[in-house]
Image (cartoon, rainbow over all chains, first blue to last red; front, side):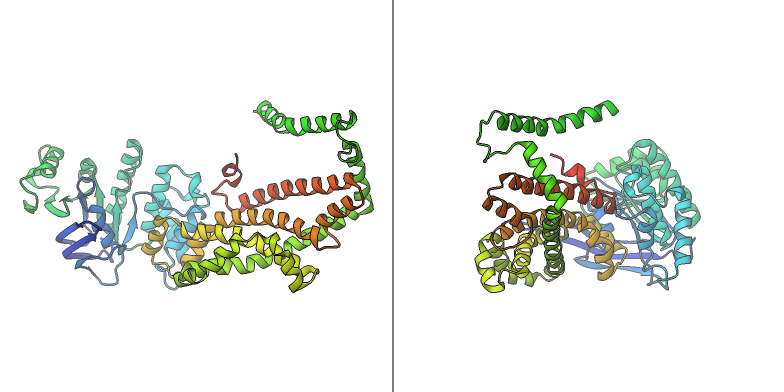
Length: 251
Length: 259
């Protein structure tokens, strides 16, 4: 486990969007803990509040109520978005450099920045494309750079919002393997959002199922319920109207 | 591929050549009075003589210098103002009506007033150029700044960039293509307004050359002035687009502006 992988504690988190007609309760009373160095997948149908939860963890949105605490407190998340969000006017190297402006102290430590960028690009196999522009990369390569940009921040806390959803099946599978092997080495606390149950099963040791703004099941990869036909089991939990709010604890 | 390129070039030049041939035929057969429509050959000879005497380049140089000076003043006002209005919403509310009023006034219509205020020297012509080029630069840059993608704003926040870094690394580069389009439009507006100003109050410049030639009954020279303007406009546009494409390799302005 990396030294700085934080523990993340979420308590009674709510997010309410006030519309002109009615308020939308996107995230409802979520409390959970991500243990240091754990890989957690959050699955659920579109619109269930997964991304809102991640955006609050990333500091991109303010919760309506509740709290998010990181221990150690000086931890910060590195975010990988659904699309790589590489700035098109910068080379890959520069895209990664700006990610380190507030991560490497002192900021002028160019050698340290160069070392980290080099190491992260090497990890995703793109060291030879450091001087390319984003439009010169394929979708898979660009998403790899997004991964490298998060890795080079060495935050110990990774937030991933369906990072592979727009890629073709083969590229997605390759990137899943790469991510898995990188996580094995780094052991950073990771929350991975996906609507692909198979992807969640491949990557995560803990699977949270979200429905209508609430976590309705909190499963360990080794739980008995996931031993036989795990995909069907998760799907039936996601579809089951009988457990709309109940936390399904199996451990 | 090469063959296709040749075909495209021929297609592009076909209409200009056809018009030239029609012009030659019209003046040869005297469909129009030779005073009103001199032959292409006579115009070419007049151009050659003006070029040899240096008069053409002198007038072109004077007009060009006016455009450059006026345009730099425009940049000096429009760029900081765009950033200020973008970051201070109250300034937008404060300046909206005066700016909209100025935008609705054609610069040429202010010439009598400008001559009264600044005389017929360079100041009145510079003022015309600034008025003509300000809005294309200002509005395009404002559009670029206001339409920045939400994704990039979020990225900047997730990387904890401060305000200065956000402007330097994200906001300005994102608005840069729109800014360049503003420069391109602004320059072409400059030329148009300057010609009007030079025809009314000037003793040099291409506008003056055209009007003076008309007064002297030298319609061939009027044509030379007009062709110089048109050719310079096309060349300037091509040079700008090439230069801009080097500055923004992620976006092809030439491709975007093809119609």
